[in-house]
Length: 236
Ligand SMILES: NC(=O)c1ccc[n+]([C@@H]2O[C@H](COP(=O)([O-])OP(=O)(O)OC[C@H]3O[C@@H](n4cnc5c(N)ncnc54)[C@H](OP(=O)(O)O)[C@@H]3O)[C@@H](O)[C@H]2O)c1
Image (cartoon, rainbow, N blue to C red; front, side):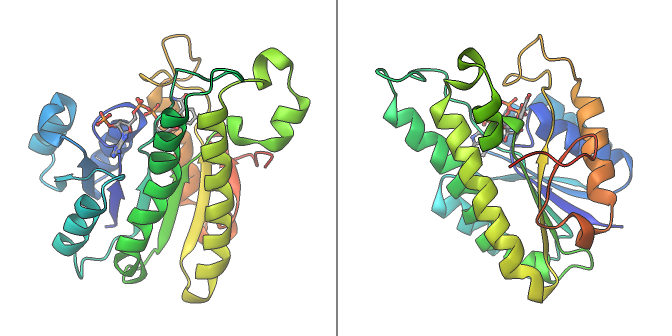
């Protein structure tokens, strides 16, 4: 059976990734800034002995190194980056919140790369050798060009951090090809979580089930691609 490490595993999409992998008997390394504060995660760990909780703040280099030291030599088949933030303040031109923008880049872009660098040898040592990050259709340059001003003329921080993530992981996918490590980007759709809000059409269960089907495909065929939870390519 495979091992998956999930960031941001205490709520939202992350905890649903934990739930579904645990139900299928995977070993799950569920990481979170404060795992002890998530009742959902603690319950999953008590029900499934192969769910192990670890502390990880993806923006904190010491925290990332601490986890990498703890997991040294442990193969990780799938490294799944779900942790992310969506700054809500100062999203319009004339009132941009640069602190929020820094935080979005720290979490959504640097956090993914920092954790990937730290755990790369764990992924390389596994049979499956797969890395995936949750991006968003809002990252699409084509989407901005084709969208209305109301849809497209906002959310500089979040969207640019995810566009940069798409580029960074595309570079990574090429760079890791010779080592047989496969890297993909996923769009979960608009999902009911704290981030997605109550009006989102998709439940976490549906979105994660779809993304798991995509991840279960041939890693060579999905590497370097940006795919939706429905398996369809998303525009860059
Ligand atoms: N929901 C949607 O409709 C939607 C659509 C497109 C893309 N996405 C993407 O999907 C991913 C998950 O989103 P979600 O809807 O589950 O969001 P969410 O409900 O707001 O959960 C965000 C998760 O990220 C964690 N996180 C934030 N900063 C972190 C850090 N520095 N270190 C470690 N963990 C951190 C949070 O932990 P704390 O509890 O400690 O804050 C939480 O577990 C994100 O990357 C998001 O951009 C979501």
